[in-house]
Image (cartoon, rainbow, N blue to C red; front, top):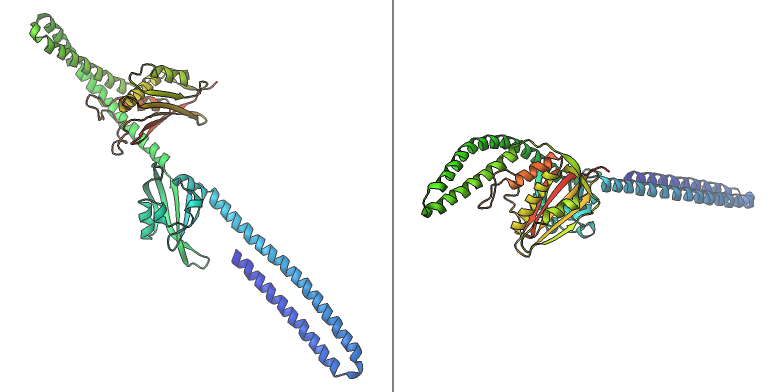
Length: 410
C-alpha cells in the first residue's frame, strides 16, 4: 500500500512539472512574438509579465494541492501500517519475524505471553541467544516447518506444548527477506487429551480392580479365620509369627478396600462447602515440623461431596508431608476462574521426576516401598467426578498440584 501511495505521488509530481513546462513554453512563445513586433513592445512585455505571474500563481496552487496529496498519502500509509500492527498484536497466536541472519525483527503480545519473553529485550537479538532447543534447531535449519507439535521449556522452567509453523518471510516483490514463526499454545489442550485418556484407562482398571478385590477377599477371610484359631492354640514362642501374619492380613484387607473404593462408582452427595474450613480441618492432623500456610479467602465456597473432597485433600497433604522433610513448607492458595475455583497445594519437597510425572495418577503406580499406588489415582477420580480437573507441576524445589472445582452458588 505504501508503494501505491508513492507511485501516485510520483505521477502527480510529473503532471505538475509537465504543466509548468507547458506554461513556460507558452510564455517564451509569446515573448518571441513580442520581439518580432517592436512597435508593440510595451504592451507585449506587460502581457508577458502578467502571464508569468499567472503561471507562478498556478504553480503555487498546484504545489499546495501536491502537498495536501502527499500528506494524505503519508497518513494513509501510516494508518494501514498501524492497522496491520494492531491486527498482529491482537491475534491469539504468537508471531515472531526474523531477518536473513535470524535476528528478531518483531514479536507480538501473544508470543511474549506464551514464551515468557519481553519484546524490548528480544528485538535485535539472534535466535540462538533467546531460544532453547528444539526451536533454535528448527530456526537454524531454515527449513519450512508446517503445523508441527513440539514440547518446549520456557526461560522460567515451565514446560509447554506448541503447535508451530515456520515459513519464509517475503517482501512485496516476492523476494525472501527472512523467516516468520507462528505458534499456538497447546498445553491446555494436551492436558485435556491426557486426562481424557487417563479417564478411559482408569475406568478399565477400576473394573479390573473390583474383580480382583472380590476374588482376593474370600481367601483372605479364610486366612484371617485360621489365624484367629492359631492364636488360641499356638505356643508362646510362635506368637510373634502369628501376629505378623495378622498384621499382613490387615494390610492386605486395607489394600483390597482401597481397590474397591477406587472401582466403586462415585455417587456425589453435593453440598455447599466452605473451602477454608475444609482445608483447615484436613491439615489439623499433620504431624512433624511442617510450616503450613492457608492463603484462602474464608468466604469462598465450592460445590461437592464433603466426605470425598476431604479424602482427596488428605491424600494430597499426606503426599506433601512425606515428600517434604522436617522443616518443609506446605501452602494452599486459590483464585477465582468464574464458574470454577482453582486451588493450589504446594510443597517444598524433593519434587517429581519428569519421567514419571505422567504416571502418578495411574492406579497401582508408586515409587514408595510400601505404597499401593492408589492415593493419587483416587484423588484424580474424586476431582474428575466433581466435574473438575487436576494437574501437577514439579521442580527440584517442590511440587504444586492444581485442582479446579465448581464454585458453589449463593
